[in-house]
Image 1: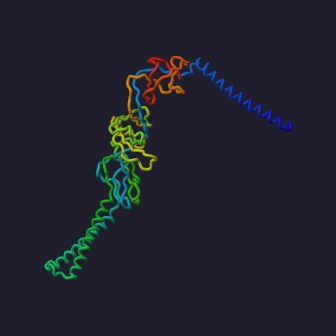
Image 2: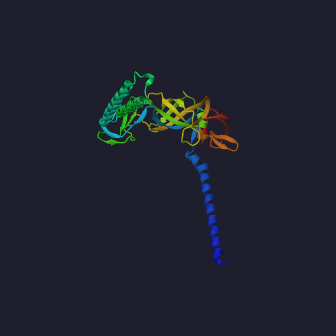
Image 3: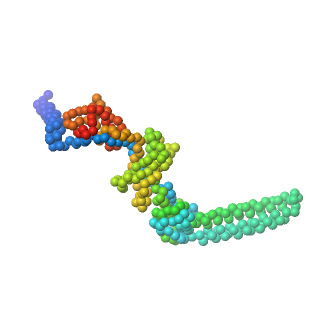
Length: 343
């Protein structure tokens, strides 16, 4: 081994020792801060043991939807001939909202009516020719009568289709509601039958939809009370109750996930909440009243069990826990109301 190799080895050993000493020094500083400096500065958080109710909750995320919400489109393509509504307008069920230019549709209907009249006259004449023949009708006469009757029936079906096409030239409101959007807010535009023309929603039918997996859905029942907090209004609570729990899993979801709809029972301003808003639904599964509780973060765990630091930062007291809530946890043992705990 030459001198350069020996020098490299010495440098590497020195660097490794330096790194280890730096780590040990950092740990010592952390320990000194934790045990000596932090307590004198009051950096430890404290909490008082209180008596009250601890609630076990299930929180599921969801979205605001509406039972009466529809995207309306024509069954056929054409040109918009008349538009009778605008965005934000309130309409009644059955009210005509928009109509295609029906000139061609009406002409087709009139032609179908005329064709039916002609076919009916031909069929009537064929029947009149054989009305007194009884069983003596010849094959030629039977053929002529059958052809005439078939033509009449076909003309009737064509007239029915033309009548339906004419009726479908307009779109009517399927329920009372507000016009949320209009795709083409003017007439004279050629549209395709696949294009949505009008969106309508009834804000009085708003609800919240959440999903629960197979381990969560068994904890829920229809009629169960729910508290909803929307992300747009985090300081407001909306009351509701479970309206429906699906019996079959939702399509496209991984695993067995079930749809749950929640109807809103508190007075909610429908002009404030919008479809698509997200939030959390809080379900109360069970609760224990008149028990001792502390904030969750003050309960620690080691190999021997659960413990807290009672009255001083060095007094480690082992406890038993009961009901666990979102922010509170029930505790029992050598603990009493009013004790001060350290984090």
